[in-house]
Length: 610
Ligand code: C2E
Ligand code: MG
Ligand code: MG
Image (tube, rainbow, N blue to C red):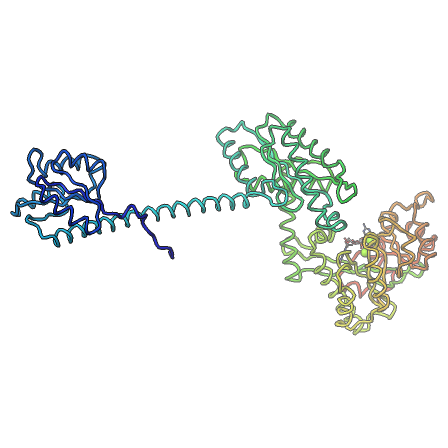
């Protein structure tokens, strides 16, 4: 501590009361002390001494022992008995010089003892000593008090800081709503209460704004923040009109949570959920425009069966995601089956990551056949997962999940790498003629990587294959959603001689006016249009139309999912050039696929259908 402590001036003065029945002594002592700067009070007997002592509170008393009436011992005893004088040090003055007397004096509480006739220097020295002693004591007391005060000060400041920190830690800065921590704490209390009173019910509503990112991306984060604040205040208004809403918290991002308790039945929850969805569906007036928003809600009915707040929140989260999956702007109650699905997805994610690391993916090839000449013109590479316990897993079980989780990007790269390696092997062995192409499916996320053209080029170069062998299959959706960027990518790929097909044609948005400007070589008719085709002309659906579109746009057309001879005949008659389907061959491992090239088509179609 850098500060020094000073004692207030009036605390260090020396006020001395001299008590002696002999006037001469009184006079000499008073003079002696006054000359040394002390303030002196006099008393000639015990009674006067007691009065003066309590009236003036001297710093020290010089007290004669032998006095008529009340002697010094008696005065001393009485002074000690009075609270206001009990602490004043006393120096006894006496002609008595035996050690017995001195001991007696000290046993009465004397601070010191001076024998008469006294030496002025000795008296002064003893007085000074006592005063200094007192001063030191006072200083010590003062110091202690000061320290105590500072400690209290600091403690108070710390408590304030702690309180502020706690507030910061428990609330959301942007909306001033309680935050997740605060919510979990309160939920924990409600859950603990439910353990004691199992009939006490409660519910958690987990809210996530639909497509909030769109607002941030298009109008900027400042507007996004304002919108979140406005959402918070609409939710707070709902809280004010429903006593069951115990707390509303913002969990971060566009996520909010409500805790409802106590509840008699689920109807009370539905009421609040409806009100929340209605409140958020009303337009928000921000940045000089009307913004429309909606939210999805996951609801968990809370009871004593839940052991941890986090479990409950996890379930609410799962229900919320399901609500979003089903349709935007709705609520969904959590059901245990949802949890199983979430656990399954989590496991799938771990497994798929491992699969990529351990390279458990395999490429199967399905022949693409020229429908007139019935000869193989190419293959479609279709990924399979050789799962360590489940055997061969088909893409239907993991591709859409890989797209959701972003794993489609590394997965797609592995597929491309393996396919290029197979093509290179086939080229080297002379197994494929120059016109054979191999199609690889590409997800939208892959195409959106900034360096996608360089990446694809890298795989082609590394394998050392002719770029025209590779045909990338893109879905309509992935092209149309990201128009400008993809357009550039496709042109760059075309420039590098890589071919492009539109997969599952007819199932997307079919913005034909746009499609015909794209550098695409081929349309693939989705099998959902091919499979209903029978001998009856009204079963053809839009297949003839798609074939015509392809021809008008100068594109090739491939029909997918040909399973019957009838479908083949119909497609041939409609002028569809190419096709693939179980009628010819299911997707097979690379070596099996390549062996098909050596045999006449009739032979292997017969084998396949046998
Ligand atoms: P797709 O690209 O439309 O591939 C055609 C799917 O139809 C393949 O299913 C194929 O086995 C199946 N198929 C072919 N002929 C017939 C038939 O006559 N009848 C029936 N019922 N089905 C037929 P698969 O291999 O299960 O692949 C399903 C989808 O998974 C693919 O549809 C594609 O969208 C996706 N996919 C497969 N491999 C990859 C990949 O490496 N990357 C990406 N992004 N997606 C892939
Ligand atoms: Mg495909
Ligand atoms: Mg397809």
